[in-house]
Length: 400
Image (cartoon, rainbow, N blue to C red; front, side):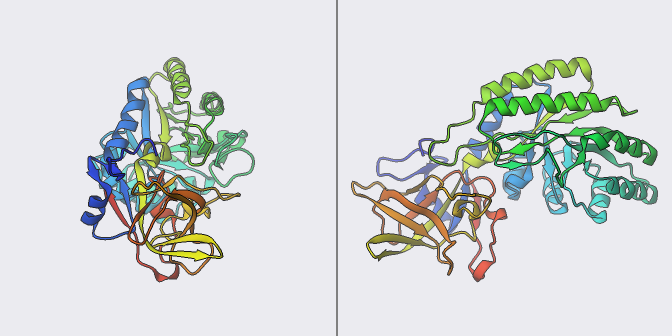
């Protein structure tokens, strides 16, 4: 990958240190390595271009590694969690509880009680949650801060995963929100705003801006049904990163221009509210790599297989088993140069044909002991993989 520098001898460099030295310091492979300088630079590039009234939140589900979350918490305005476990990670950072929000379609009563006691903003997603929070407030005396997660009638087209539009388990259908707002008032909860998340992993700027505009217009319309002032409008994210051959990086400047225009409108409509963009993959995805070591080189009926000590149990997404309809290869490399290239298939050690990290890719000729690298691995890696499958060792994560 062009964004990862190499030494003259072909070794990749992370944080000014050769990859092989990082691996020696780690003590073993496989491992994930995350470059904190790349994460910081991505956040700062957005912040410098966005209106200062626009707040950037990090969605912890993209990568919940505690050290990484602690680092990024110093650079963003808020954190978004989707479980009590992620809430604990967020609460252990420097981020004030007031700037943490909690989403998810199946929050338990215990999670709602924890979130209320912590003082974080709860994105309610059903009438059931209102009833539970009302009881929690009465029994504990703690106030519940809530925003309404809205399921709009539209979606974010061309998204890797669609989170809104049509029937969805996420949020409350927009036509039911007026009734929900009445329930919030009757329950004595502290209403603060709206959360609209329509999709993720999108590389088409014009579709993202269209969704942002529709989300904001819907929030402005629904605000008329609330007796309490709107303090925040979270219009989600959806910013994608290129993974596969032929994909082009997102034209983020178009999105930034649109967000700045929305911010100007928001200052007229809701002068005391925050406009929030919630990003995960876009902030951390390109800052991470997955590294395994080649154990064996096998030739089967004329085709070369490189067998590594890592695989789908650590990096399910790279194997194609995390939502890909047609499997495609992530960008990969061998940590050395070679004048001789060959077409190979890279697999892991698991006893299943699903354990596939790269299929029929052209790479420098590799031997046992060489390091194999999967790029674009900073998001939805270790935590999204079946790490106990077939009983192989877990993978290490390191922030460099």
